[in-house]
Length: 319
Figure 1: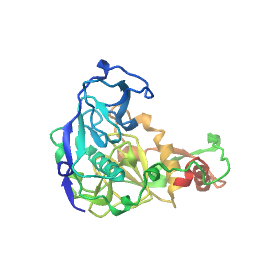
Figure 2: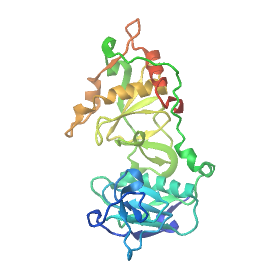
Figure 3: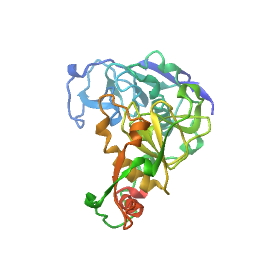
Figure 4: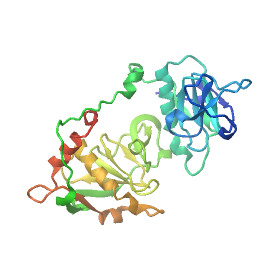
């Protein structure tokens, strides 16, 4: 996959620099309303609706908004004209792209967020970020509605009662082998591949980028954030790489599947509150970790109950 700079495909401009406090907010349904895009990661970047100013042209429709500060690299496809706050950059396509292509490039740009931790802004460097020259073939067959097509239907059409009174405590290291990742740091790897790279992020299952190197950690394991967004756990359904600095790997000593993995990762994350205020969750602390789980007649973890409980939840048919 050939990579090119953002500036090769898009004209990069600084957006209309406005302060929301100086604008007149209104209801979206009003005839003269216009979207106001800020540095938020939510709601497609739209934080308010404001009255259009007669002598001020908005940013053009069918462009991409990128936050250079705040929630750095919060990137969204804007179908309508919009005003924007400070530190918002506008990407104007140099050739005609479909909606799917625009959304794909938003996705690619957001995947570079890890480069801008610790207060680093994406201003001078934004135009030089590398993105694929062409959209992958599998994206071309998608329709916009396909991107939001989750079914609320559960896999198991019965209620599974959640009663913790009969649960039992287990040492985490009885159930999992706990180890540090042995992978290289992300800056030593080659971008643009299909291997997910896990860092101590709290979103997107911990995945912050994709690299060309072969995966070294097996699917069916759980990653634990030692630092960064400490206390977050993620079940990994595919082979992956992970940062050696702030991720620990939990390899099960039992037969695991996605349903059991999601159940356990949720229980583990209930202990997140113990790791605030820069207290890290390293290998030693994980070896002291206890987890309370439902038990079967033999006083061992009731794996079938965990599996059925997840299957009984809304949206489980999408797993």
